[in-house]
Length: 182
Image 1 (cartoon, rainbow, N blue to C red):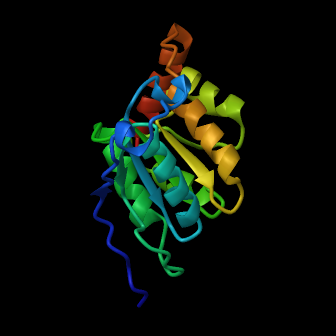
Image 2: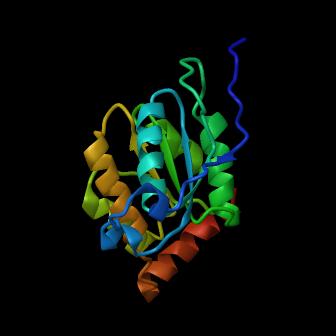
C-alpha cells in the first residue's frame, strides 16, 4: 500500500512585506489581500511551492493543503478535496489546485458542492470565469504551464470579481439546482 503524505493543511507563515523588501510590490498585487488555499500532488509540487512564495510576497495569507513534499505515489484527490471543501465553506477565499495536467485536480474539485473549478491556460478564461461564472478555484497543470504564465493566470484570477449580472446569477442558480439533484 502506498504511503500517504499528511493532508492536514498548514498555514504558511509569510513575513510582512516590510520585512522582506523595501520596495513596494506592484499595485496590482496589492489590490486585494486574500486568504488562499493551495494544493498539489507530485506533478504540481514544484509550481505550487513557487506560487506560494510569490503569493506570500504579495501579502496573501496561504493555507497549504499539501502535499508538503514530492511523493511520486501521492494522489491528487487527497489534497484537492480538502482544499475544495475549504473553498466551499468559506474557510479560504479562493483555491489553487495543481496536478500534472490540471485535469484530475479539476475533476476532483468539482465533486464538492459549491465549488466552481476550472482548468485555466489563458488569461481571458482566468478573468472571464470569475466575472461570468463566479469561479472560486483555479486548476493548473504543473507539467503544462510554465512559472511565468502560471503567475500571470493566478494574478488575473485573484483580481477578477463576479459581475453579478442577472443572466449570470440565473445560470449559477441552475448549476446549484444540478448540485442539489445529486
